[in-house]
Length: 269
Image 1 (spheres, rainbow, N blue to C red):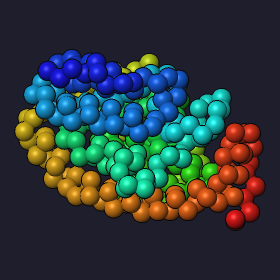
Image 2: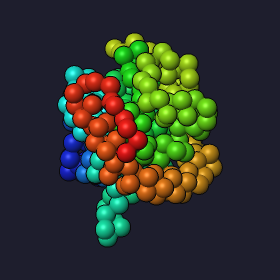
Image 3: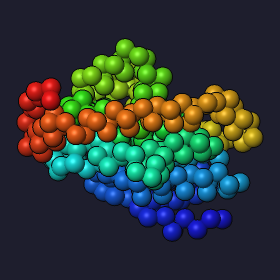
Image 4: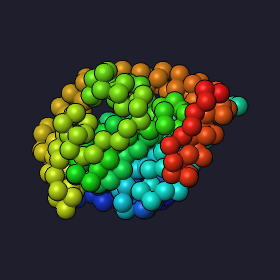
């Protein structure tokens, strides 16, 4: 069995055929390249574990993942985007290269969403095959409210899950959906009281793990065929758009407004 203690800010517990992978950066579990790389390494290591047939992806603290921190806020959702996600001069090592690898992992994933899944945190939630949420959960692709472009492959994953029109609504308004609305929209698959969240996620994972493991991976490969490649193409484009928007006055205003907890005054510059 792999040594899962070596992965920073990520804990792994294997019980039966189900591994619980817990992000441990409470309260809001902001991510960076190192955290996403740790998740990738854990997922790929679990792919090689014969005793692991399904994964529950969970987080400590108030938020599931509030993206990358731009500014502090009471609910942790203030700065949910990827300010450092742009391509490096040598073309390597950026956040989205690691994110694409998450989609290449082969073990089915059930995400347990207990709080905010905002910006890139929403992108992380959509890596999973299924999402179990509670009424306290919050979902938002808030990039436009920052004068920024969405990322983490949401170009592909969000419309495939909720439809193009609903995805456009979320992306262009940046509005936040509560757990009940997200469930009605199909953004999450189950809605349960918060105290039952992990148990329900584990129940679904155990149901998957009870099926033939070779068949499950075969079916999943078929159903997700080409997904990682489409995510790679999408993130390449998302990064180009993010790169020029990051230099605008509107982006700076979006960050300031978020930090000051006020509506932004965008000027189109």
